[in-house]
Amino acid sequence: MAHRTLLRGGDAVLPVGSGFETRRVDVLLDGGTLKIDPPAAVQADEIVDCTGKLIFPGVIDDQVHLRDPGLTHKEDLRTGTRAAAAGGVTTVLEMPNTKPATVTRALWEAKNKIAEEKALVNWGFYLGATPDNLDELKAADPDVTCGIKIFIGSSTGNLLVDAQEALEAIFAETTLPLCAHCEDEATVRANREAVRDRLGEPPWPIRVHSDIRNEEAAVVSVRRAIDLATRHDHRFHVLHVSTAGELREIAQAGPQITAEVCPHHLLFDTRDYDRLGSRVQMNPAIKSAADRAAMWQALADGETIQVVATDHAPHTLEEKAADYPDSPSGLPALENSLSLLLTHGPERGVTVERIAEAMCDAPARVWGLVGKGRLADGYDADVCIVNPHESFTVRDAEQVTKNRWSPWDGETLTGRVTDTFVGGRRVFSRRGGTTTVDGSPRFDEGVRGRAVRCDHARGGFHATPDGIGPA
Image 1 (tube, rainbow, N blue to C red):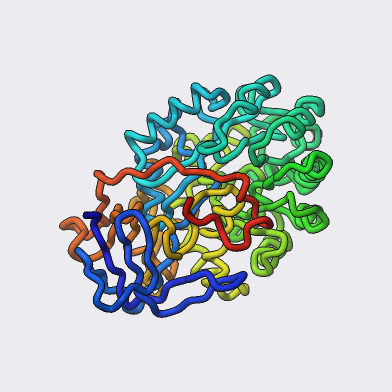
Image 2: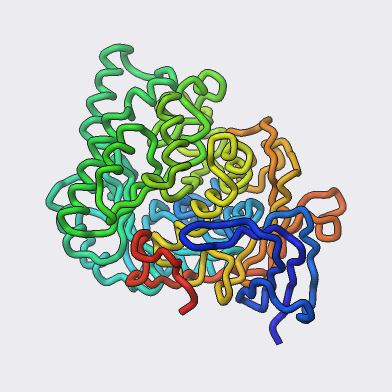
């Protein structure tokens, strides 16, 4: 008989109508599936007292870089999914810019084999677009491939797809949902030369990163992608929106278009370069305080921004310490993203219920992930428990990610994940009986996640207001 865990007396964030509500209710993890408000006499192998706690659906992060294979000195599928579990993230959708890049079905399958050995949470892998792999993109298995990633802007290797003919073919001839890194390559190059004319040869001050990757670069590229998606009636997701100008373009687009924002674009702006240097060097770059405010408003109203994702992209501190522009772009965020939103969201109109919608439900709907994203009968038993009153200070040395640093080092957050369950099994806990002697959190390294199942016919944010329930 399947192991049963009863989460008793917590405040569960539940779907209701077209939104969410928080309600005191028991939640039964019956093996790999959920039962909400089971009978009082229900039998369970384990009862977890959730009094005073929030019970969330497992967070789904639809944009992570876990560096496996080929860049595992930065992160790998074990350390990255441990960090995910520590942050209440039960499903990660991982990007293709590894070494080698995931641009063929064979390489995609090889990465899945690695995940089967290492991943403590559920996973899905994007197939990366190149100028010449259209046949591979068209032949991808839609039942297990979450989507196609396009770099319409600078990238490594052969992942840059900038030629109009190649983009037209991808949007016209593939069927999987598409997402893209949108920064116009010509604009970025022109801006870089303008900086060179002004400052001479590098190294340059880190703050010019936001001059090179400015609002124009993002807006031009997003406008181009929306045009392609609209003309070809193709579902398209705008990754890591960073500017008010992009929001205006997205607001005028049709239902094929969805978008997301990342914690660093919500919480940092160009003033933070003086304090944090390359720790906040990202692509797209952080922008102005006004852009930050626009991101928060768009997230709160839910009309233009549907999803919160991290773009978790770790590098070593030694790599980040190089002079700009040799310092790499990217930062780790997986294990703190939910706490960051719980700390900073409510004062900006982003409620607990809106956080659950943007971090759990919406990504499942955008990518057609079967049984994910909601606390509802029959859905997968992917759950996290949060103590909304517990405050903690982010410390580099205490990070789970392989590189052991965070741009939020020294910041005190309120709202901490205490337990994470994947497929009904507790993979992570901070509770007294399940921590090590020194009080550090404990992981059950015997737990393994599973590859996501996709139903793209039922998927799409606007097409499925009731979620993608069990098959």
